Image 1: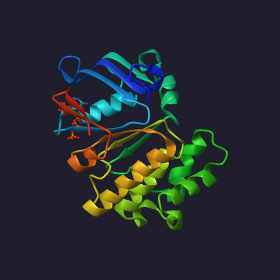
Image 2: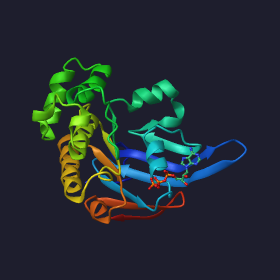
Image 3: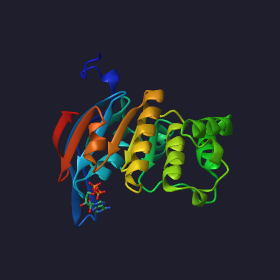
Image 4: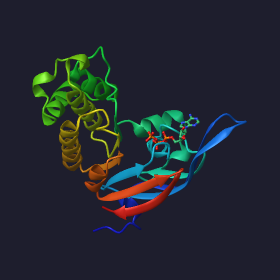
Length: 233
Ligand SMILES: Nc1ncnc2c1ncn2[C@@H]1O[C@H](COP(=O)(O)OP(=O)(O)OP(=O)(O)O)[C@@H](O)[C@H]1O
């Protein structure tokens, strides 16, 4: 086992991270000093009431939103020192994101939805890798279907394949089962954990579901922009 004090085994380190949004005249303080170390390979659930700041924390840790204060290091790289292009490059291929409403491109087939981002990231074997990834999520027989021809659960499988295909070190999932019925949701969660394990990735899941949180190694609870509890599941 590696101690949490060894920085090479920390996927994400946040120190006193704050986030203010809104206008300059009327700023809204959304994150109010977040300290968090997430170990590589760990699965972490973020729980909390609506509006507590879960999605904002995810966006900030993922580098989609820039922190207003404090420090975020992802795999040892200080996000604060990167300009927008460097931040986008740091994200690409290293961070995979799965969202509640899938966000697939409607004019592309399942295969293209997974392959095109790989191609843009410079992969020469994008379509072969995308097909293998779709097979791994049980969609080998649906690769030429468009999102509108797929069920919600199938669309989320495509979204997982897309997030995992580049081999990211960190996978974020924001309410990945929020738009699915309970039994489809359970299948999707098992799939997400299986793909995480196959990749050895760190997995951070935002959820309202205590049963899903209990599947994770660790549960962090947010209230009003702060972490109010942090425990092993
Ligand atoms: N661009 C913005 N400008 C001002 N306030 C914002 C902005 N984006 C989010 N907020 C506010 O920040 C707070 C936290 O929002 P966030 O979406 O992070 O919460 P959440 O815990 O993910 O909620 P939910 O579970 O409903 O998705 C909310 O009060 C929200 O209204």
